[in-house]
Length: 292
Image 1 (tube, rainbow, N blue to C red):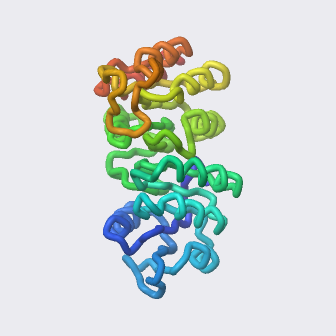
Image 2 (image 1 turned 180 degrees about the vertical axis):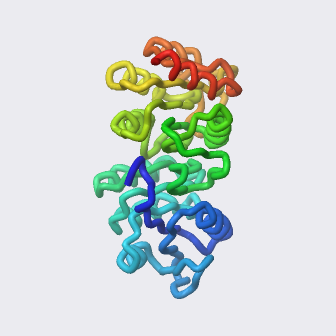
């Protein structure tokens, strides 16, 4: 697969018979995603939007050769669903679920990664490769095929950034919402490395937020490893210390994780930083023009 879904993606929907699973199965099918199976314990033999349902992920993979899964399982079972997919040999696992207990992810994530799975999320909107595939809940119609990669901790800012890029005529190669939890499967550095190696990506727009040190680590990676132009925006610039802003991972604690520190690190790495969310698209265009 490309980064990380394309025409060869064969998607499995975990908890396909739930209300959210049903709704987004219909939407992903309408957007051209190849969904080959769904799983829901005790629901084998049913169909959702023409997609066959199996009791377990293992059965679904054995019957359909699914190579990707999307998880709509409620939060208490989110980590178990992740492990079920990983043990079944699924290559790409997108965990949409919000509220998965952090300690559950601390235990499950290393196991799933050791089994060879690529994980996006939890608490994320998924991934879109325009014109090829959508695994997640992003509005597909705002996307346009092109060569700009998008990485974001925020779901809604992903959509806003994509819409701005499309309006500026800057199509996207792949758009990934990596999730806003403290423990996630694919941090910025992992995705930046993939975009650097991707021949279909010529520039990258990165959207971060307060809390943690992921953006500073990304800035260091860009400075040392990236040859492609990068632009960025940091959300939460007016957030007071100790106040969580939306995401579980978006909190300034111990004097670390401030927007100012992140912006300074990004600019030190020669990344063009947007001053406001309204300027994300133009910042990307500036970074591309500056490189020319």
